Image (cartoon, rainbow, N blue to C red; front, side, top):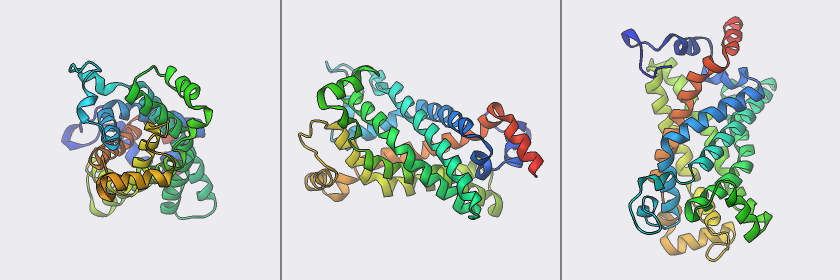
Length: 307
């Protein structure tokens, strides 16, 4: 579907139909677990293909490395394609993580809705629990991605090298921080962002895309600032599997703060992460709205009948 409004500034018919018969608050609850996983995978890969450089620059700055290393080869020559090194693993990461997040969030939202909880609580609480569950596989994928960004290697060869050099238990390094981060991240992306969008549309008459942009930025600021220290500690731990500088969670946090200061250390790369999260929230929710009528038209018909 075209991202540009049709005649008279209106949305294309299919998108307008989605807005009319099924709000974002209902979307994941209307789909089956498998459908939610597929929707999350598709939107995650599409979003990551658009904003991957922000992720590379964020990880690079958090580890105290020069940003210039992301576009120069080992021999020092300029190569813009270097910034896309690790993109397949990143797409696998976000696509897979989004699949788990959408599937788990839909499951928990249905569970909470059956308990009689209010719709706002269902939306936000289900997203939080879905994000917590997604942190387990996400941690492994991000570990491989960060190692690939630093040292190169193939998508399949990198995890094999990690296990060979550091043991299978090293694949769980940074998992606790990842689970906490993803819980807040998903709560903001699938809970807070569409909730703010809906409130602005209903109460203030904002245009849906403008409201989504405002919701995305608000959600990104909330998720980004609160979880950034966790993300920084996780990135440093996963970039140093040999534990030459960073050991456990507490020691890593103290080492970063001692070397760079609390703000300059634990919040390194915050600008790039806010840019990454806000664009991800906007892209994922936009792609979600526009792919549901294409992939799952039956959900719209069921919602229309329910009304």
